[in-house]
Image 1 (cartoon, rainbow, N blue to C red):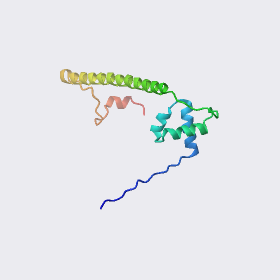
Image 2: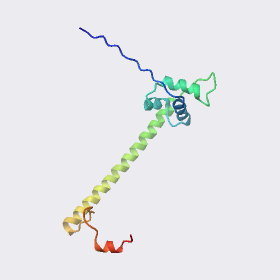
Image 3: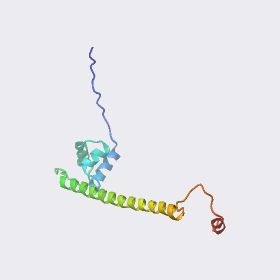
Image 4: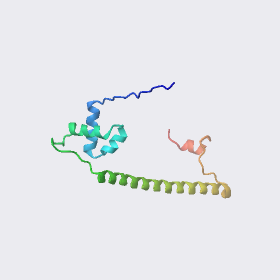
Length: 132
């Protein structure tokens, strides 16, 4: 026996404030329609309808067209920023590794333990010198 399965279509409704917030984000240039659609899970066509309805800048009889080049340039700029940050993180990691190796060498060759141990009590000098 084969079961007949029907898909249940979900109808979502959005508040007026949510719709106006998305239009406001689009008008401010923070996000493109494509980005808003992916971020909030709303179809692009619905977002365009909201733009026509709630936009302060839209005049009747004019169609809103988003330039793909502007959204791709935003994405490229963000990718470049990510690459810069990854490079910075890599440099910091190299510095951390170097300092840890220096501490290990100081401990082995000079018998100096530089690493702070949290379980050790404070020395008498630091207790007297501190102002509580």
